[in-house]
Length: 158
Image 1 (cartoon, rainbow, N blue to C red):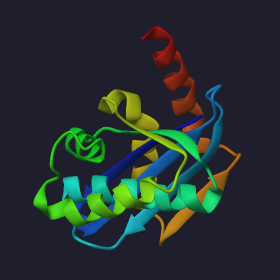
Image 2: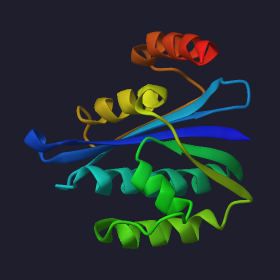
Image 3: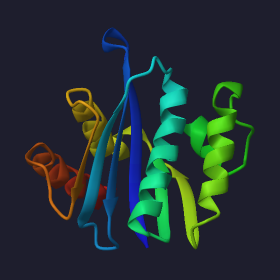
Image 4: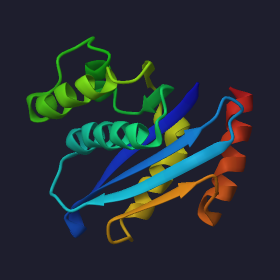
């Protein structure tokens, strides 16, 4: 079972939205990461829903079948859990993502507080400075090293 953290952010001044995602194995080792820029004037809830969509497609490409997908948007995660209807601005994205999620063996959607999603947020912020997207498999980016150490320390304290 893998754990995937996702985050979306909006940079209104640049008129871009960005997605960051991190995948870890059962022992907490980083397996891969993704930063993606989306050149569209999306709002916060829209980019959070888009982050789910982007990540699910990426997981299909990697043939990952069992994972927990964590995000810090309560609205989006509850919509993905089908606990509440999605906001109308993201209903189509949520519906599409729910269909895609059925193609996996096991997907668990989980809400995490912003503090527990810092690495995905760093990856999203990184995307604001790239042209399209960057993917890292089985390697850590230097800007994540210190954050990974802090994240492990924070997780062990909680």
